Length: 485
Image 1 (cartoon, rainbow, N blue to C red):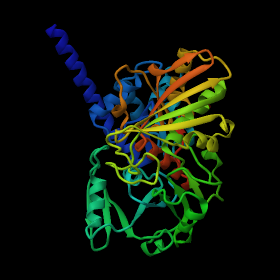
Image 2 (cartoon, helix red, strand yellow):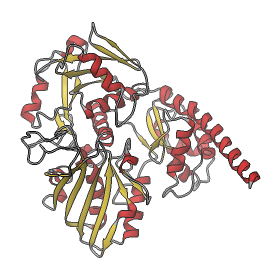
Image 3 (cartoon, one colour):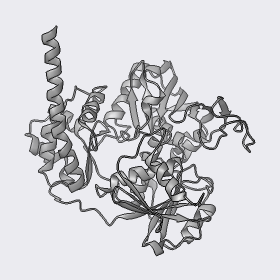
Image 4 (tube, helix red, strand yellow):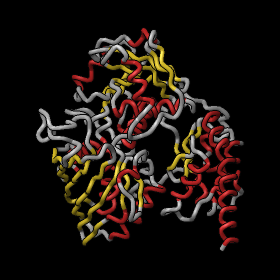
């Protein structure tokens, strides 16, 4: 037994050594070429050796074969020498394809990545300025993501944050909230403040803090900001008329609402209808966290089985819209303590699906139950289908989509009898299907979809911002469509 134990420990140590060799290659590809690498959707960037090993461990679920760091290292070593341009590259999927190929590794990679091979530089377009109007839960997460992406030349540059001044030490408090988060942990990096100039310096990103009481009264050009995209995170204005106030400000080109849009405003769920964005669109909505979580899964099921009708029940973490303890609130039931109660409330997410996926118009109803947890929610999709759906077949289909389809950035899939909501904090996918919870009887299907209603949604917002800026990175290897799965 002792010999076997020593052997296992030695194997682990050897894998750690390989993981440590992977880290500088991942960093070099990102900072010199603007290449983001992942293992079946799980990023390798800024990971420790243990983090790299965990990414490989997670990839084993549902993959065609077990992927280890010894497999990844030679691919990354070869990628470094290809003179790549900006791209998002899934090493796990590349390796699956390579094992089916007769070519040597470099020839194979040159063929698979041809559009970005021998570019030899980031070759990024001029960075697009981003302004965060509102700095609450979503605003601060967007800031963290934008700051983290800046080193790779993502093309989005966080230039300013606009808030109402809350106190004389407002800047100190705003920086502290960016630095520390009770749900998502500490900020990865350094933060400095300049009270004289009202700026925050975060990992080398100089961010102007602008105090304003109205979206129409800021001249952004005074701060060197031009043709900016304003991400309105306040939720105060949700129609085109209200949000158009931002366009009156010098320096603003477009506006993205990080909440469900009203009226004729386009609600964009990245992965579903982001290709409908045109140059003429000046104001858009990124829909809601719940709409982003359920729409990709609903599209997948509708494409394969057809949805006659259904009901969406959302078990949603409480938000700042609710009261901490009982107090007056304009909304029904939301005045009761969020920390002590389950609260039935309305949600427009089911109807909002049709704004991104018109074929489901009128087919879905929805409700929500707010529960005493600070983050991560669960959508229960109770669907009546045109065609019968076997549980194992449905799960295999959704697992494959999570690994290989165009919806891989939106859909994830897990199978664990022990997994609970906090396990999904920090998930970058819009929604995660819980395969063990799937229920199926004939034409009736029930799916359980987890989602980090803060971070997962923020990642979807970033993808829409990249699309608006015209610099959403090319994704490799090319993925099959949902209907082809």
